[in-house]
Structures are given as structure tokens and as C-alpha cells.
Length: 297
Image 1 (cartoon, rainbow, N blue to C red):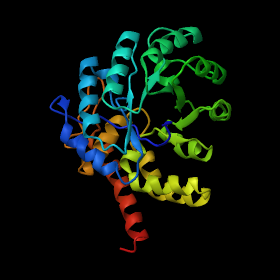
Image 2 (image 1 turned 135 degrees about the vertical axis):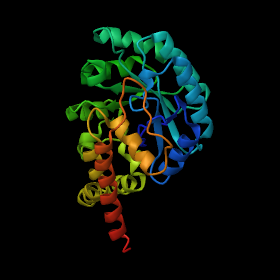
Image 3 (image 1 turned 90 degrees about the horizontal axis):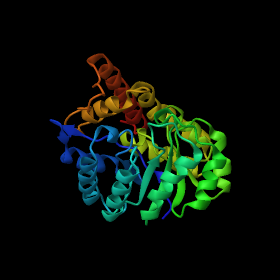
Image 4 (image 1 turned 135 degrees about the horizontal axis):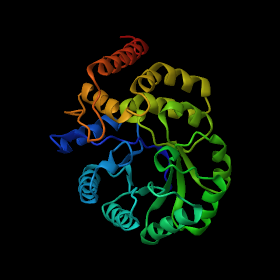
């Protein structure tokens, strides 16, 4: 099944340094009204701060607890092709619907080098490969024509997560038969209005029911009504949780909602301070008031 729809990238809950499985189970329950699945162990999931073994242990635990109707895309980003291959094999063996693969992110990248890396991963895959176009993290700007050429060479590349803000890539990728998923919260609605096939952003994990309403209205062609929902019930969160510290702030929000036991992050990230948490609390109260008014409470 091709990867598309509402697939939030989710943070990984930690408690006293280890994976907090009960909190993740609550996250699945919290998201269930509004998502088609989720992305595990991507950038938001803090995978660069984990060992390969830990990532595999978390993937196995999460895939085992996730309902069959939810599609899970597992991030396998790595500077080592061998470790990426090991993570890919493990993810598909445990039931992942797809794997999310960025360009390696240490040495300078050239198109032929990225293709060579992707070919090695593609050889072991039986599930879909979602290419992660993330220039900030990889220091690599992917050209639309290069990705189209790679898709012709790779058996499993069927979708791209577009974190780049160059929305002109969407049309040629669609013409080449690739699904495109919006990948950055600060311009979330621009992706939606541009006709992406889905999203891989944080906010649907925080406001799943509201985001589902917004998504369904867009799929029905009602841009104005979709934006009204987005502006009233989603935008306060995207304004508050920030750029660059959104992992810490999304964890703080989930803790305040009673989903996560702790807002703990891994070094080198830093947890949200009390002043920032007051702003997040205000955003949640604003959304709650709008929802109550809409329901006539």
C-alpha cells in the first residue's frame, strides 16, 4: 500500500533514561481518532541520539503494540549504510509499512553517492522506501530531477517527505508517480493547500481530531473551511512549539495532556523551561476554549 494520509512524526517518550512504553501506548490511543498511522524514530523521535540496538528494541516494542489499521513508517536514517540496512531489515520483519531514509548527514553529498547509499538499502527492502528531503539536517538540497531519476532506478522508492520549503518540487514528483508528504510544521497549511498526498509533521499527534477534520475538509475541496479549523484549533500550537526546539515542546505538551509521564529529552537536547511551558499551556487553553464553544459547552 502506498504511503499517504495523516502520518505524524512522533516523539519518543523517555523515563529515567529509558523508553517509556506505557506512555507510547497512551500516545497511540490519543492519536487514534485522527491519524492513519505515524512515523517512528525519525528526527522528532530523537533517533540520532540512540544506538542502533536501542532503535531496534523500540521499533519492535512499538510495532507490537500498534493496531493493524495504523501504518507505521520507521526512520532508518544513519551515516552508516550497514546500520541503515540492519534497521531496514528489522523494521520490515516486525511489520513496518515503510522506512524513512534521509541522505547521509556527515560527509558532503553528491547525487551519485546518495543513489549508491539508497541502492544498498533498496536491495534488502520488501516495503516502501520514503525518501526524506531534509536539507537542514543533511546539509543537502535534493533536486527534483535527481529524485525522479533515482525513483526509476530503485524498486521501492514511492514517496518523498518534503521538509524543504521548495513547493515547486511537488508537481514534477507527482507527474513521476511519487507521493509527496508535507514535512515541516511551520508551513503545514501551505503543503496542504499545494495538494500533498499526506503529512509527516508533529502537530497531528498533538491535535489529532482537529487535524483530521481539517484534512477531510481539504480532501472534499473546501479550502476555506479547512483553514478555519486549522487557524482556530491547530495554529495556536504550531505558533507556540517553535522551530528548533519542537521536540522538547511537543513532549511538554503531551505531558500536560496526560499522555506522556515525562517530558524528558536526550542530550544534547534541552527540556522546555517553565516560561516556555506557560506559553504552551496558554496555547492549549486557547484551543480548548475554541473547541468548547464549537460544541456549545
